[in-house]
Picture 1 (cartoon, helix red, strand yellow):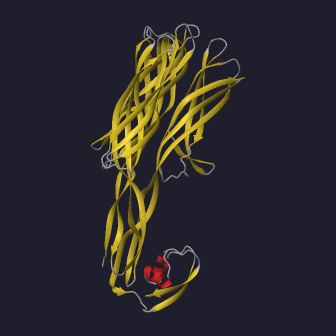
Picture 2: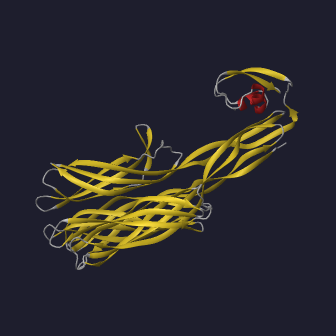
Picture 3: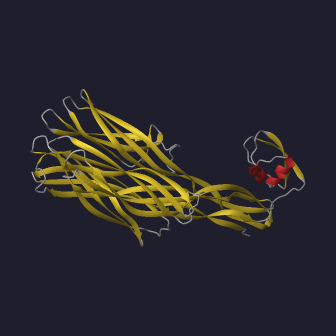
Length: 503
């Protein structure tokens, strides 16, 4: 007959989508009357911004835009200027099965290549390819055996600790402030913003999120070819409503910059800078249960099966500062104008037969030679990211790498570029537990038994009493009582008396 197995539900964060796609970058830029004419293309880049990611019915919809930025030298002597353009996009995916909330979606993107040419002095064309990787995660509910209803069964139980994504809090917000220039600005060349360090503090049904957004503005001043850099830090302190949260939970916050705009006039040497961002708070609750990992019958012949169950064994925060430097021999006679650093999302790879987490850093340095001509040198460097534990392909890594301040200098004929990196995120550590899925006793076929018999057995250090009890069709507690031991695992080699019910 079949015995009743008592079960419970174990929640774990499981992927429901893992795919990639490419999108073309094709655009034409016509310079305005107030733009300087093009003489030489110096540097062109493309970056993406995700403005929306949501599930509507059975579809995943992703919305955003590309921002192409082109630096060029004008026909005017020694003048470096720039122009940029936004290209909106939308992508949809059909989901094969229903997604249980709460879910979250990660989108990583990288420009594969971009070719830019000046058709004439007022028209620029760009062609390229951008590649995205999309991963979606939802709550997977798994049935796990927690007990076996049988008076003749002997079970091996294990306490399983696991984390479950129990709530999220998403909010879009804006921060703004006035910025004073040191000199009368002539032209703004570059505007960007990225999040800084983020910290969370939990209360009942609420999470306090403290963070920073750092905005960077590059501009030129009148009657000068020098490029000036200005950095403005916006502190953010917000309270997120996440029902079910308490001090025993673990919370992590992601901050995504959606856009940055500046308004003002050069006469007052002041502008108003506004940054739009989105905050996404994820709350994990730690829980535990007693899982039945093995079982046998002391009296009857039986059939049993186990099944693997994957759980979120731990959630670990990652917050690291790192610095990376590259050198390149470019020749003498150059003056560094400005440098950039751009980081890609980390990927798991193998390095010298060791599994590591790596990210690529793309360095770009604009330099000027003695003939007042501008050039751009680029180089890529890989870094290994330390998450505080060994990298495992079974784990899920939600890590972002932000490139902060970037500096460059010339030493003789060598260009040296250095960037500070902020590595943040969290890791969901996986664990697989084999639990009982089926247990049946055949009450019509009694196991061969011998009662009132003690068997002498020499146990080895580390051996489980359950395995010994299973061999001799006895009970773990009887072995412990007979030998006056408290642990279910032998701490050393020793002789044991086994109350045997049959072998």
